[in-house]
Length: 174
Image (cartoon, rainbow, N blue to C red):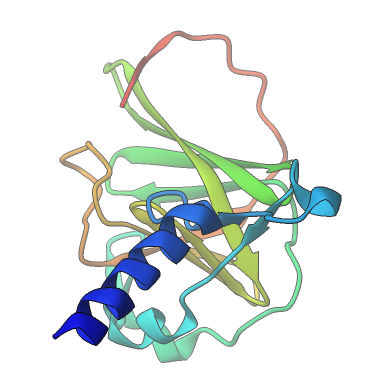
């Protein structure tokens, strides 16, 4: 009994001292050399349990139809869904990425959401409520809690690389 309590206390102490932040999926450095740095952790095994279908415009395709890519094809991506346009802007933020998504329907205010501390490992992106896969010709994105009714939380969305837009219209934050 005492040894179980000791093991549980040790594990809890180790978790607290490691600086692990489950929401950001990053691990803060514990040595003096990397105390200001953050290492990203991608749960690659979790991707096997994510949806297998991709929304491409108004069509549904299988995720297996999209071969993996090893590099970004740009920092800006766009997708069309029915009458809505979705744009992504991806920026490096230390050792992780910051992803901003804008959802725009004609005649409506833009809905924006920024995902902080998105980690990348190979062709995979992993953040709180956002998963991504680099594929030939673009980027598959799954927003599990987008805050926008028009963005499905159970389908990947295919985004194509595009040139950056200088859009000064004001939107709403999500």
